Image (spheres, rainbow, N blue to C red):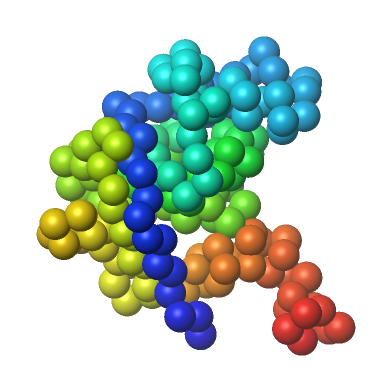
Length: 172
């Protein structure tokens, strides 16, 4: 059983609804490595994003974040840039699974769109409750994240978790 996840003092990057995986990992750069793909992450919506995002920042979006293709590079580009979590009212199903498989936590928050650009928040994620705490300590409820997904986040992704759990692994 894990202790949950607390991400303090996260800076918000606001996006709209229906952000698709082609915007997160543009097809024109898929032949390159993650260093190049990440430089172009969200460039059609926020040209400054990749150069200005800092480790520990969070992306907050409208409904249907990560819709589109199944490319895992969409979630990987966000992780590569240091995004600590993505918060939205809903996510594309394949993106949701890819993100957790890579250790990127996603919070389903019906009130996500009330968060503002550059606002500072703290994310609290536990298997039985999740919420976003605003600077004035107002909580925004989010759906609880199942313990097995939190385990993946703590391990840094599914592959790391499986390595830890195999005989002779780090936590065998």
